[in-house]
Image 1 (spheres, rainbow, N blue to C red):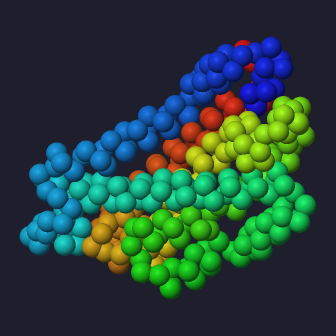
Image 2 (image 1 turned 180 degrees about the horizontal axis):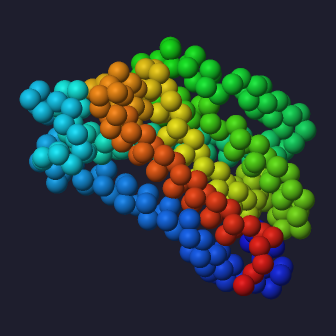
Length: 294
């Protein structure tokens, strides 16, 4: 709910935030997602320091050790490397790509959406037709086409995913701006002589934060999935740098003899994406302006 709407209904912004927080915390799946993501991030950041084997240590004599057998909790891969260490180091890469791509795509989409929605006219039409033109390209083919012309490393993959993931955000923000600029507070700011940039980014944008937050959450899951997809096909993060996607791709030759090589990174992708989607659902319900204030 927009701040202005809350004030008009006699509810202070602080009361509205507390109500939204209570609704979010009462959403069981969202809280499950928060706890899972926090634990997953903590494990990926700090976990490798507590393991006896690192992700690059090769032990040919321990090749294809199954999980829970001996000193390797999650087993080993075709080179005898500790799967748990590799999963955690890969998590650092995949999660960094997800959150990094989200931040950049949000910046691009928000700026284009705000400018297009506020100014409208030929500027808005031109920007939104550009958005529509980019959306006409199938995302995965656009990703693969761009990936074929860049050096595949972490930073380039982040920018690549951001470049193909901002369009939906721009459309959401543009629709919000077109609605908000007609409100009394925006008209009053204009009458008082406020500049267009101040009205856009100080008055209108804070009142559109709810759908932006939800879109940002879901874009993290999108980026993790897309990174996994292109890495699986060999166009993303390249070995020996591990990511969940290239671990999954490298395991295809060993599905019959060592299925855990594919199952474990697949479970990590599923767990992280599902948890982030749960958080997005919880935020959407908590910030829904039509939700009944309790």
